[in-house]
Amino acid sequence: MDKLIYMDNAATTSTAPEVVSAMLPFFTEYYGNPSSVYNFAQKSKMAIEDAREIIADSIGAAKSNEIYFTGGGSESDNWALKSAAFGLRDKGNHIITTKIEHHAILNTCAYLEKNGFEITYLDVDSEGFVSLEDVENAITDKTILISVMFANNEIGTIEPIRNIAMVAHRKGVLFHTDAVQAFGHIPIDVNYLGVDMLSASSHKFNGPKGVGFLYVRNPKEMMPLIYGGGQEKGKRGGTENVAGIIGMGAAVEDSMRNMSARYNKEKNLRDYMVKRILGEIPNVSLNGHYANRLPGNASFTFDGINGTSLVVIMDEEGVCISAGSACAASAEKPSHVISALGIPKEKAYGTIRITIGHENTRKEIDYTVEKLKAGVKELRAKS
Image (cartoon, rainbow, N blue to C red):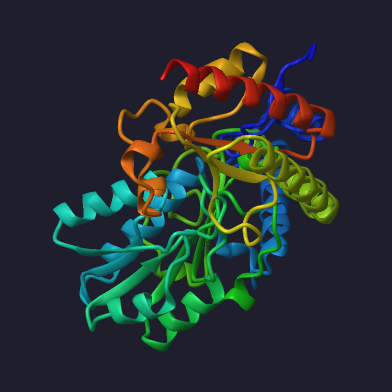
């Protein structure tokens, strides 16, 4: 192939041209501070509120004031957990999550443990699913929050979010979901699902980096994240990232408009790729559920190789894939997600993740599979 083949869309996506076009005027033409009262600055303020409406509509939120803009998914996750934990401390100190969450959740939970909170980390089955029975059995009279990711960033498995939320609410417990990988790719309706808080990040659905949002069903109960000039209804001080917010709004519009077509294209390419890899490369397994997963996600474990070495070989052939989450790509230990599936340590190191986007083609898939076959053969010959 003469061009770079990018198949690491779970790590980040390209910023769509129409998103860039929507952002540019707010760097050079409408650069006023949204907190200023004069008309020039209020154009920025109105554009921010338009983006807030777009995002609220995209998830079925009752009001736009249930959307808070943040610096991305990790910030949204941190804010959701810390606000619920410290805000509800008089009611209890117990939080439930899973062993396969993003590190933004796991490391925040570790911080909360050091501050007197009890955390239950639920196991998942071999396909990455959380057991509803385990969720219900873990709830105590001190449980104040359950946080389970919508879809896993490494293996793509989509969790039974609505059913988990129902279990939580029957016990009077708040429910948060990290939807960073899911939002913009599959339909989400917070009312149907019963979600109390939801995190998302712009750069995962062809928006700009450094901006995201947190949905909160009862915003009055949110504790401030940053004290400052009163932005974001007094909950997150600091001058807003105007261009980033406008870009995220444009990306949301684009993803909602094209979701069905992109979903079908990505799923078809993924299924074709999975069939070829499982059929043409010996001693390989697909991680996660075969069907109930994000459309572009495919995680494979190859016996007898090192996944990072295969990523390097593929890079030399002009193909970008990953050995797991981009946030932990340099870690020396096997992925905590792959380990949680019960895959032995010696095999876990042979895992790679390929995440297809709507810009990829069947020709690129064929090229990638052929290079994978050669790379795996080369590595196994050396081992």
